[in-house]
Every structure is written in structure tokens, then in C-alpha cells.
Length: 177
Image (tube, rainbow, N blue to C red; front, side):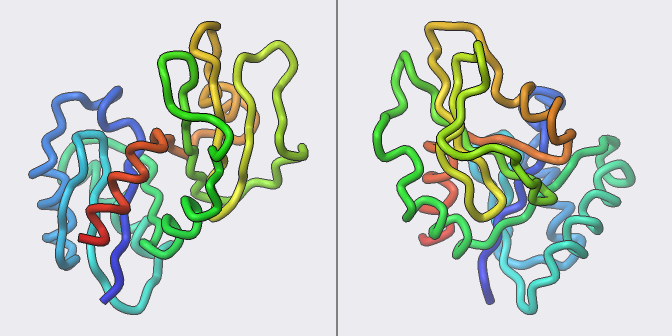
């Protein structure tokens, strides 16, 4: 069996009272094995054979309102995809700190970006530095006001979700363990 992570959009900000046990219960009821959660922001690791990611995403998105009363975009990535993304060292030149926020935005449907990397939208305190595995990595100057997620949503729609680099690393460590 291979390991995957489902990244569920908006759990911490939109649904702060959602319990990991409830999310895991949906996965288990749908027949997924080895179900585990990482943090409390909609990161569910599971195991499965014969990947059919689009079908899994659809099945989960249909289950959220029926079983837990909310709608949410669900994006699934394999352990191999996350490992490949991080192996590329997308943030090699900068560290997560008080002045720089490192964010990975995962897209359900991989968009054609329309710009070359690195790219900093005019007047914005963030820049996009890497794109691979359906994920766009950005660095934000936290001393200024800016929202790369909001900018991306206006340009590419809402079928995406973001995690910090540290969260992606944590997910991958738990998948490997």
C-alpha cells in the first residue's frame, strides 16, 4: 500500500471546532486504511492501493456535507509527490522566520501560471519561487501586509489550499514513520 495525504481546505480557519477524530472517521467509513491526522488543520494521512486520486477527492468532497455538515475542497498528494517537492529545496535561499513566511499552495487542478519564476507581483510583499507537483511555493515578507493566498484565489479560483513548509515537512515525516 502507498501513503497519501488529504489536504482539506479551510479546516482550521473556517471550521475551527472540527475534530480530527471526526475527519478520520469519514476516511475510515469510506474504507481507507492507516488513517492518521497531522495537526488540527485538515491534514489526513491514509494508505491505499491502486491510486485513483480524482475519484478519492470527489468521494471525500461528497462525504463532508453528508457526514460532517460542511463543504471543502480536498486535495490529495502521495508521499512520493511530497518528497519530490521538498527534495527540490524550493526555499533553499530563505528560512522561515519572524520576517519571512514560507508557504506551499496546493492546487486541485494544476493551473498554467502565466509567469516565470521567481515572480513577485507588483507592489506585493511576497514572491513565488518554485512550482512542481501541483504546488506553488511562496515567500512572504511579514514586515509588510500581503496575502499570497488571496492573490492566487483571485487569479486561479478557490480549488486550492496552503500549508507552511514546516507543516509539509511534518506531514512527510509522519508518512515516513
